Image (cartoon, rainbow, N blue to C red; front, side):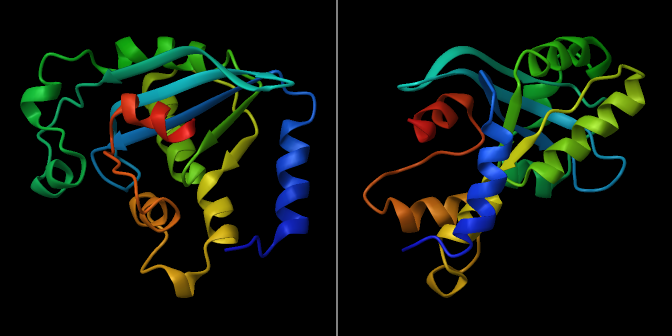
Length: 183
């Protein structure tokens, strides 16, 4: 495996990292893909960027009650059930803390960040709580640069990790494993 779009990817990466002192790696699980989709789980890890690497400083992992029944497809995909979210706070309650946490870092990173950013925008719009987006490193884009499409069935995170680290076992949609994957 080798980087294919190394020049443009390196430039994008360096532009976003230049001068940054902190980064948040985050993920959302949602009720769907559309413009009415709501976040049902938000997970994030904040790191200080040091000369020797990344130093974990804070974590956030919470479920959010979407105030609607989850579809069987979403339950199957995420492992999150109505029972798991029924006693969770609503987005109106959780959004201020999420946005405050996200605003504590200079840059963000996510796997397919355009999706997660869209979900954050939708939550902001529904709740009326503004937040300021930071530059976001798209780890999916980096994976597509690193792992050729001929080498994988698709570029889903699970598939890419199995190709890159065949000896390791990963669980998805849980913060504790998100942190492990980054080290």
